[in-house]
Image (cartoon, rainbow over all chains, first blue to last red; front, side, top):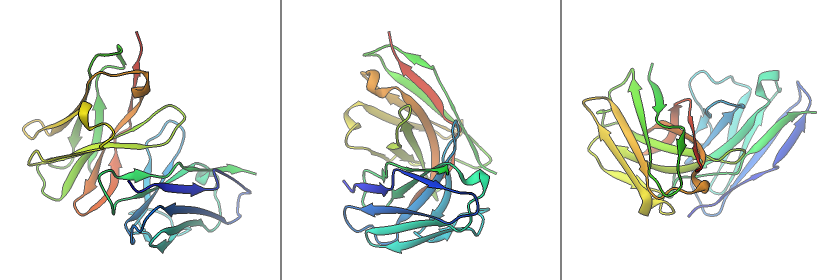
Length: 108
Length: 120
């Protein structure tokens, strides 16, 4: 099983600042990596797939990078609606498809 | 615009069987471009992929749950279903259904989720 490790667990950021979230895979997943945003009481929403491609309707302030085992999600200028939990997910080595433990982005 | 909606009992007794259905609208579940998935999230915790089914009936399960799982599909009703047998409190979670693309197994879109509590 490919274990996905996200860091940090919690990130405190002020509105308008840049946030960088990390995701590490226990073995290579090439570029088969997705990022999701989840707000309380809601289903996750796909943000990024293929490590760096924004999903339909996702603002340009969200960007993804990396390949192999190291990935990042960057939010260039945090808006109030961006405070949420973010998950990465690999779809290279399955079953099982696996998610990271999540990073909570909170208001500083 | 494709939409998914989970339905089923919100309370299941320990050792019994959990059964949920996901109804798909705005797209045909018989499309050969997609898998149809179940994912769960225990309260306050992360996401766990349960398994998925292809329109042909081919299934892929999480090995950690495989012995207790069955996912089925009804193309005439445009829905697919999940059964988990011998449930315990550890199966208490919000259960989501979602669509994923063949050869690009990201999940989009998701249903809103339904909370299933295992308790006597």
